[in-house]
Length: 459
Image 1: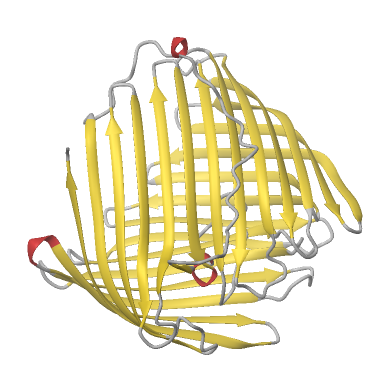
Image 2: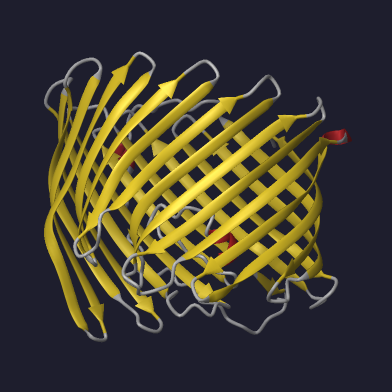
C-alpha cells in the first residue's frame, strides 16, 4: 500500500502485551565465535518505471515511477549478532493521483546472543504488502491463502526465544511472540484485523546418542476485530521422542492433548482431543524415503493426514515428491500432492518446478485445500545478460461453502543486463488473473523497466 507523505489518518501500531524474556549476564559463559566479526552496511537502490492496467481501473493504473532504498546494518562480535534492515519506496503516478506516496515499507530487527550452553534471540518486523501479491507469499504462521485484487495487509510482529543447556543432556527452550495483522482498502468482509499472542516451551532430554525425549506445551490467543469476528484460544501439552533406529533410519513421535476454544457472537465452540505427529525417514543410495502421519484438532473438527515421500538426487537433477491424503471430520477425503524438481538443462539453463497442497482452516472457518504451483526458467544469454520467466498458481478449493473457490495465476518474463559501475538493468512483463466463483475475472497487466545497484561497506 502507498501512503500520502502528509496525511491526517492515524494508523494503529500497538505493541502492548508483548512478553519480554530477561537474560542476565551469568547465563552466558564461554562464547562461540561467529564468522567475520565487525560492522557491515549494505545499500540497495533502484529506480523503476511501470505501466499498469487492470479491469477495475484503480488509482494504481497508468504510468508510475517508484524510487526505492533499502539499508541493512549488521554487527557481529564473538558473542552476538545484531541485524537491522529497512526498505521503502517513493512512488509517483503520472496518470492518476499525481501525488508522491510511500510504497510498501518494511522494517526488520534481529538480535542473537550465543554461548556454549545458552542462546537468546529477539526479532521484530513490520511489513506491508498488496493483497494481490500476498497470495504468492506463504504465511508460515497460518498457511492461510488470501486471494484479493485490492487492498493491503500490514503485519507487525515481535518474538523472543531463550534456550538453556544447548550442549548438555537436558535443555529448555522458551519462546513468546506477538503479532498484529491489519487489512485496509479491501471489500472482503472475511478479512478481519487480528492480534495474536503465543507462548511455547520444550524440554529435551538426551537419554543416549540414539534417543532423545521431549515435553512440550504451547498456548495462543487470537482476538479479531470486524464483522463476524472470532476470538480463539488454543492450548497444547504433550510428550515426544526422536529415535535413531540405525545409521540410515530415524523415527520421531509426538503425542499431545489439544484444546481449542472459539468465541463468536452466536456462542462458544470447543474442540479438544488427541494430537499425533509421527514421522519416519530412511536414507538410501540416491535419496531418502519419508512417511508422515498426523492428527490435529481444528475449528471444524479432527483433521487426519498421511503422506509418503521420496527424494532423488542425480548429477544434474534433484527431485522430491509426496503422495498423501487429508480428512477433516464432516468432510470428504482430499488428496495431497507434492513435487519439487530442480533441473540443470545445460551450462546456461535451469528450470525448477514446485507443487504443494495443504489443508487449511481460514479465520472465517472455511475448510479448504490450498494448491500452490510454481514453474521457473532461467537462461544465461551472455556474460552480461540473462532471461528468466515463470508461472505461479495459487488455488483455494473451499470444501464447506462458507466462501467461494478462488484462484490466481501470474506469468512473468524478465530480461536482465549488467551495466557499468555495478548497475544493472531489468525490464519485463507481468500478467495476473484472479478468478472467483460467480464473479467476473480480474486481469492486471504490467510493463516495467528498472535500474538497480547494491553496494556494501565497512565503517
